[in-house]
Length: 68
Image 1 (tube, rainbow, N blue to C red):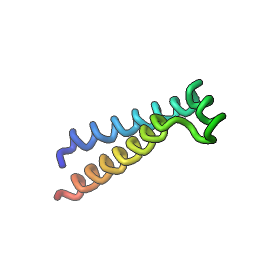
Image 2: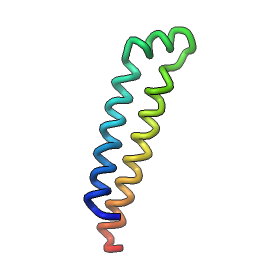
Image 3: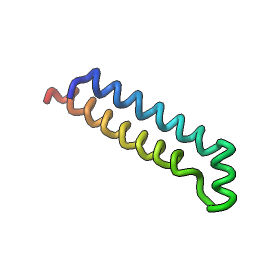
Protein backbone atom coordinates (compact mmCIF):
# COMPACT_ATOMS: atom_id res chain seq x y z
CA UNK A 1 0.00 0.00 0.00
CA UNK A 2 1.27 3.46 -0.85
CA UNK A 3 2.50 5.59 2.06
CA UNK A 4 0.28 8.54 1.09
CA UNK A 5 -2.80 6.32 0.92
CA UNK A 6 -1.97 4.83 4.32
CA UNK A 7 -1.57 8.29 5.84
CA UNK A 8 -4.87 9.42 4.30
CA UNK A 9 -6.69 6.38 5.69
CA UNK A 10 -5.12 7.00 9.10
CA UNK A 11 -6.18 10.67 9.04
CA UNK A 12 -9.75 9.79 8.02
CA UNK A 13 -9.88 7.21 10.80
CA UNK A 14 -8.77 9.73 13.39
CA UNK A 15 -11.34 12.21 12.06
CA UNK A 16 -14.12 9.59 12.31
CA UNK A 17 -13.14 8.77 15.89
CA UNK A 18 -13.24 12.46 16.83
CA UNK A 19 -16.62 12.91 15.13
CA UNK A 20 -17.93 9.71 16.74
CA UNK A 21 -16.95 10.88 20.22
CA UNK A 22 -18.58 14.22 19.49
CA UNK A 23 -21.73 12.47 18.26
CA UNK A 24 -21.98 10.42 21.46
CA UNK A 25 -22.21 13.67 23.40
CA UNK A 26 -24.93 15.17 21.19
CA UNK A 27 -28.52 15.87 22.22
CA UNK A 28 -29.89 13.08 20.02
CA UNK A 29 -27.52 10.58 21.64
CA UNK A 30 -28.66 11.80 25.06
CA UNK A 31 -32.29 11.16 24.09
CA UNK A 32 -31.41 7.76 22.64
CA UNK A 33 -29.39 6.90 25.75
CA UNK A 34 -32.35 7.89 27.96
CA UNK A 35 -34.76 5.53 26.20
CA UNK A 36 -32.50 2.68 25.07
CA UNK A 37 -29.44 2.94 27.30
CA UNK A 38 -27.03 3.39 24.39
CA UNK A 39 -26.02 6.26 22.09
CA UNK A 40 -27.27 6.53 18.52
CA UNK A 41 -26.21 3.99 15.90
CA UNK A 42 -24.54 6.75 13.89
CA UNK A 43 -22.13 7.50 16.73
CA UNK A 44 -21.33 3.82 17.26
CA UNK A 45 -20.67 3.18 13.55
CA UNK A 46 -18.46 6.26 13.29
CA UNK A 47 -16.35 5.01 16.20
CA UNK A 48 -16.11 1.48 14.77
CA UNK A 49 -15.31 2.74 11.27
CA UNK A 50 -12.70 5.13 12.63
CA UNK A 51 -11.02 2.40 14.64
CA UNK A 52 -10.91 0.09 11.61
CA UNK A 53 -9.52 2.85 9.40
CA UNK A 54 -6.81 3.69 11.96
CA UNK A 55 -5.79 0.03 12.15
CA UNK A 56 -5.69 -0.30 8.34
CA UNK A 57 -3.66 2.91 8.06
CA UNK A 58 -1.17 1.81 10.69
CA UNK A 59 -0.76 -1.64 9.12
CA UNK A 60 -0.19 0.02 5.75
CA UNK A 61 2.45 2.32 7.19
CA UNK A 62 4.13 -0.53 9.01
CA UNK A 63 4.30 -2.71 5.92
CA UNK A 64 5.64 0.24 3.93
CA UNK A 65 8.40 0.87 6.46
CA UNK A 66 9.55 -2.74 6.23
CA UNK A 67 10.15 -2.29 2.53
CA UNK A 68 7.45 -4.66 1.27
